[in-house]
Length: 102
Ligand code: SF4
Ligand code: SF4
Image 1 (tube, rainbow, N blue to C red):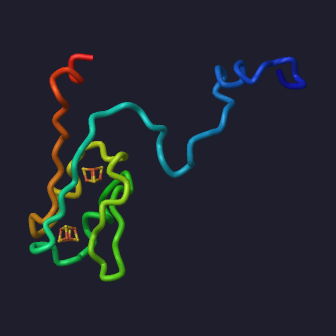
Image 2 (cartoon, rainbow, N blue to C red; image 1 turned 135 degrees about the vertical axis):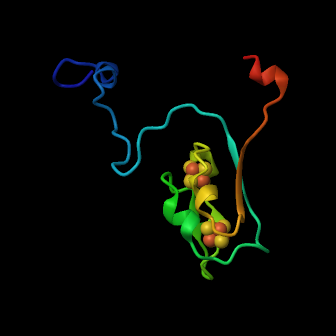
């Protein structure tokens, strides 16, 4: 209960709790995706990281992409579509049948 007579629970119900970071939309449940980068084909142009709308990829000291936040990936495949060398691939992680039934 706060000094206005409303409980903390009431505030959460009104959406007055801690807001999500301003630069990223609120998380919603979605399938998991695996992001594979084929180092032999990658020329470290950085296009994939620049186009990712979810900031899943970052660049290392040599400018090569690194999967940073795979859990944020929505499987849009924007990185894959823009890679000029077919060096990045995004696929949905197959869940065991018993998990999928839940
Ligand atoms: S599939 Fe979309 S969200 Fe996932 S890493 Fe590629 S651009 Fe980012
Ligand atoms: S767009 Fe392709 S070639 Fe460029 S950094 Fe990403 S994976 Fe490598």
